[in-house]
Length: 112
Figure 1: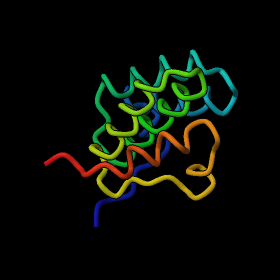
Figure 2: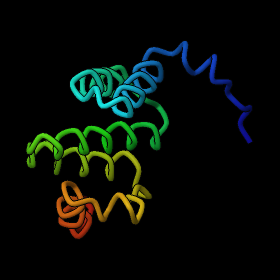
Figure 3: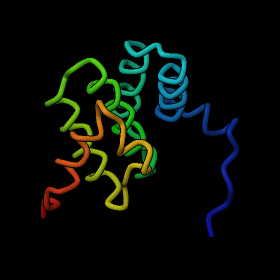
């Protein structure tokens, strides 16, 4: 079992720091900032598949919320590619903006 990693250590890593800032900005309804930080996190490189999937998922929410359906679909596909076990919660999947987009993407066969 790997040694636990502290939040302090994680927040000192550029990709993880950008991810945390992006998630915080999204929660604060600062969607442009969230998009910038999450994109930076992904470009910097998130080693944990669940972190990359979370960044892509949150970007999908931002894209769908601003009627950018194609990028929303692409972000959901990227989340699935980053972490094959990725899924939305029942509440998230039922959201009127991104729920239908997610359902279409989730019904697709994974690329092999």
